[in-house]
Length: 377
Ligand SMILES: Cc1ncc(COP(=O)(O)O)c(C=O)c1O
Image 1 (cartoon, rainbow, N blue to C red):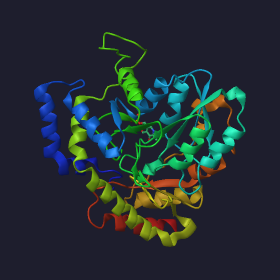
Image 2: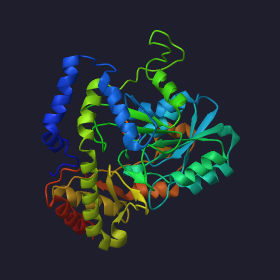
Image 3: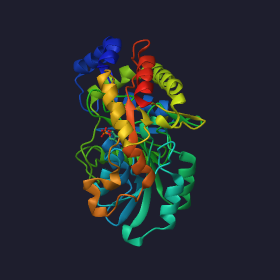
């Protein structure tokens, strides 16, 4: 079986640098909030073009912390997409607020700004007070930040960019993690910039907001960790993980470029398939970080048949996401029904993802693409 994501190949290519960075941490012994954490935060902020970056324990916490920093809680509601990983909406419920799910754009699969507008126009007071929009950059493609910023500003809402999958992507000359009042990314190992465990980071433009996040990630610390000025979390980024990320960051642009080549190879080979295999639309001015390369089959049966044929040919596939969040059991209490968000439900019913990583041997992307083309005809 071809690997779906080849972290071993990445480690083999970067082993010396990764080990050297890790050895430096083992030598200085500052495992918690060591100097690598600050060094990484500075480099990530510069990379993303965001004034502030605060490392934290996971991508999930990177979404939770901004909501905590803004006092989102019971009586509040947050608008978000239903086509995402559970973490995006879980953090809203965890704080006692209500997720309000809206539909996606049929071509980019990102939250539809029109659907957000429609949702606000038809707002039901029992949902609570609308406080924020969380837009996900799905599979690495930044959401429509300009339209969403206009809506957020017009309704006095916070805009949070869930950039868990999109570090390295860009839109109209700005990098992912620089949009909205806050952005959140994940360093889960399989993400475009992944560490060797859990990790995440919050980005924001405002220094006062960044200071609040910094306090919240260390138990609501004030002048020091034994002066506690708010209820917070233990959500620090480990020094060892920061060290690994620093070593990987040195080659990150090459990796993003390699992902573009894989995506271009897939795109060229699959374009003739027409409706039998429709790839994610990347709008002009956008670059995806290609956390995933996904396709829509004609229907669920065609997807199942293609996945079976591909597996037999040694090509692994995955389905992100089989169930939209509004129909997840965990959100059953919100009362959504099949048919409420038809675009999202249609996409979940026929989407699947192909192997995608920057270390494919020469010819592998071509060979996968031709196998996929045959499986989908
Ligand atoms: C869109 C999205 N949001 C949030 C998360 C949560 O990140 P983590 O797994 O680092 O907590 C993930 C990833 O797993 C994700 O894909």
